[in-house]
Length: 329
Image: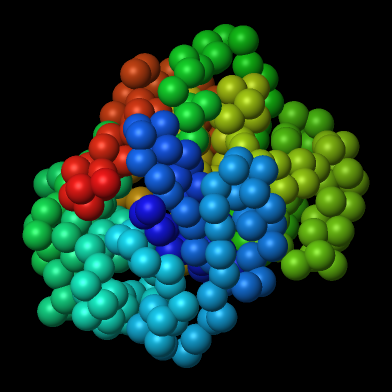
């Protein structure tokens, strides 16, 4: 059994948990066995794992990640915890797992959050546009590039042609700690009926209710914590996204996107994706955010990205095969 360790929450977002659920399904489809390890408070994703028939267990959040390994069941472990908050703890976590005689793998979180440290995983995966041209990571094996972007099996289906879509999907992350959703709703009141606004399942309940009311006030119906965005991307002529992993779902469905970043650090992390012609960028930290967002969205609505592009929906299967090869499952 391969155990996939991830987190989800206000500070770390939900993309890691979504990715691990998709990867667990792909490992099973490739003939292996996989389970997921979450924190005790990740009830929404525990329910999703149960619905998908994926074995799941919880560990108590610790101040130091390495202290939790005694709670892990036997077997190799893939770690999907790369995040600026946790990055400096990953090497000690890998070392603690290896001290138990386990094989280990690690998925990096975003393209500028590169793994470093004395502990070398058996496999490091950097599933991002342009990653194959980056410096090799300290690992026994290393793979990277958009072809390894991990998406659910629904993304293997050919997308709906753009000329049969309408409206704009707004998804500013499953947690949106920067309150970008409020900024976008406030900037585009005249677009209201044409917007479909996703309210993620890691947004606190009181704030989610306020966001739903704000969406309804401009004439659109909010989408409350959908399990998959595939159908919603395929219904949208363009999308407005945060700086997380949803942009790879947009790329796989050929949906022109606008990425809204809270600051210059997050904006810099989108450079390879933007350079590949897969999206437009708006920084919420710059003056005239509303005007910039409107003009960039108009440009995105005129885009016709080439398909298939560098993200083809097969990445989960590719990563699953590499894990099974590495772990000898």
